[in-house]
Image 1 (tube, helix red, strand yellow):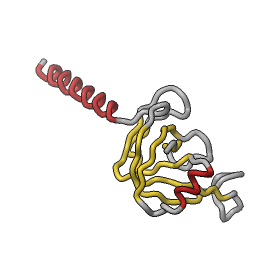
Image 2 (cartoon, one colour; image 1 turned 90 degrees about the vertical axis):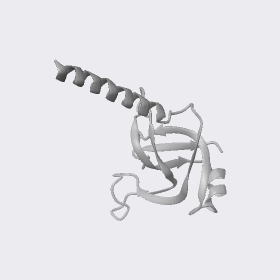
Image 3 (spheres, helix red, strand yellow; image 1 turned 180 degrees about the horizontal axis):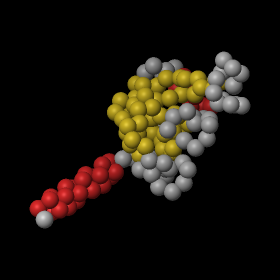
Image 4 (spheres, one colour; image 1 turned 180 degrees about the vertical axis):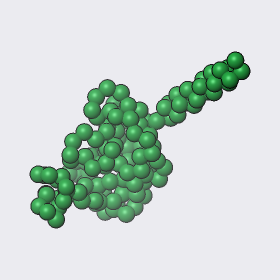
Length: 134
């Protein structure tokens, strides 16, 4: 009987820890948040096969943020709301004006404000994306 009581106590404690960690994870849009990290540009293979630029796929170049601290995200219903742990790299969704403004900050530490969503197409090259608002 002692073993089952210990097991119950340990199980309850682990559930409490899991729920406490889930609370710390960031929420997807419409929540607005600020992320800090190093801004860089990267190129990935696009259409038609999303496998290799060298073998003929279109290059897809975008801006990415390497976070100073890893994040996790809370999941819920929908393909763009998957939970993710230990996210260090976020793909940025920018307007033409935002690209022009940020181009001179490549390699710098930046703080960006926006809304998160998770990847759901072949054009998304990171697990989590930030739709930048500021």
